[in-house]
Length: 442
Ligand code: C2E
Ligand code: MG
Ligand code: MG
Image (cartoon, rainbow, N blue to C red):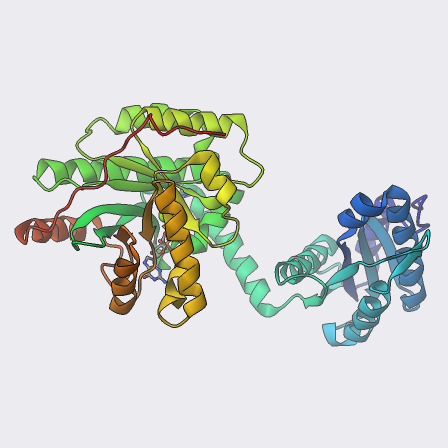
């Protein structure tokens, strides 16, 4: 079955083609997953007629480049799949992929305007039916995704490394289901220090997976997997319960944490049980609580009502709101103004260059100025050297957190650490929470 606009085979005929491959003799195939870059922009800028023209021309160019015996399908708006039977390895497909990128990125003329766009290609090979067609296709997808992540406009090969990562992800996904039940999820705590006095003013709880064979895994290894399994909410709930239990023990021992910070995922923020869980677990109010939200929640174009409402509810409960990872990608001044977090945590990528790079230092100074104007406390995270710590102190950062001062530690280590801080008189007080005064202004 053909696609009316381009004349290429459509998604349905890809299904039939797959079925035929499955029942046929074993053969190697190569799959190219082709995706146009900036196609949405073409539609938005020049209109749909221009977008259609680009798709027609793309199809013509694909047809012209197709090797004998290969098939090309349009599988979505600006997505195409080329299947090349007989291709045993990626090297044999590279010349084709290169010539495709060259031809697809040539401007298209439409109504006297020259339309500029690009193309990204993901490439994978395998032998059917030993390997499922869909698996090879998903490998090409992963390769394409990697290209897009690097900034589009290139060719990506599905590599052994990607294969290993995929295998690990699948294994972790299987094992993660039972990790919570087997009590393998724990929190570690990284102390935070008053930049001026050096006294400890709080700790951030960070999740760890005590894997039975792989050792202690950091969130970078499993949070994506957990998200795909829809398990972020239970993780965050578990860390909250565990961390607040530890905080209560510390308070009972006479060394309460001046503040405990919890990382909260977007899913958890919009989870209706967040506030009821807080009421249940945060009964001992001797430990003030902060919630860290990744900056992507604070989008430029404002946040939806549910998110904003939940943030207000947290404030009303006396929880401080912190904007995490500021400067790592999507942070915006508009976001700061709209939400007015109590604390902004400057990401390590902004902190680490400051001792070597004047420009970066000035950038950080500007962020500090803005925070000062808005009366927002500034925590610098990822402080790795004492030189950075000294400079951040001079520049007026309020709080420092990083390996140079203290690494993340277990609850047992934290207990000993707090006892020692008490002995030397270095337990400070965190800035008080002024909720619900500081509410959303936008
Ligand atoms: P984050 O909230 O920005 O946490 C700081 C991360 O930086 C932690 O990594 C910490 O171990 C690391 N770090 C601290 N000091 C230094 C330093 O001096 N140098 C370097 N290179 N790194 C430093 P970790 O524990 O791997 O956590 C990574 C991210 O995972 C966290 O970033 C946070 O976004 C997320 N995360 C951690 N725990 C939780 C949790 O309980 N729930 C949710 N939803 N996310 C969590
Ligand atoms: Mg954090
Ligand atoms: Mg951070």
